[in-house]
Length: 254
Image (cartoon, rainbow, N blue to C red):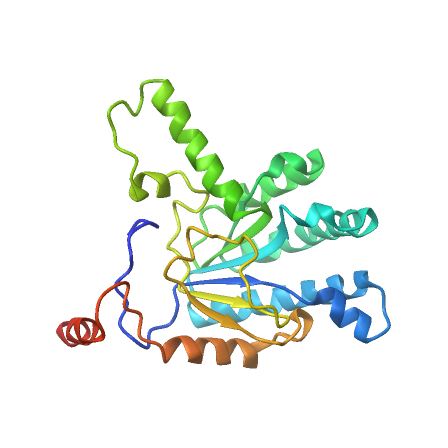
């Protein structure tokens, strides 16, 4: 199934694709009278546990919003720290991901990152590209507006080159040029830290995603909180524009 087709999922199924905004590292550290860097380092440990839990549960795709296109506005020292932490984490984790049959993917405009970091990201994708247990997608220098803009630019370029002559612009066509074109759309979106907004994250892809907000700060996010989010998802009826009766009839016929 392509990413732009609305999935047909019976009520109660495990989400195929979970997308998470990992919010609250800085506040977690400040509550402990520690520098924000301490919170980001604690957050990396939570990433590791969350990846392991999703892989064990049979989730197909886990997307983590690591660094938004707006995060460059943060203090220069914090941005520098995040880049350094990103690099060291990749160096330490890529082999572990590979051993556990986890595929690593990056989405976002990587050209703004230091060349060494871009190279390490490419190496991680290449090393793990054949893995099949879980696809871990890291959204880095990513924004939903950027994703839709770059898709439209690619389509424009192909039209100008005569490769898409006389082809109408449809949602399906745009979906083919998004950075997540090879992935199913998220079934469950989770944001930690208490904020209740999507913050320019996967705007196109979240059209029919179930949203779950928790006050838990990211370093405190654990299997229990993840289970609560999945339980909430399982209790919802996903209609995709249909009536509840249509969905129930479809479930019975499966």
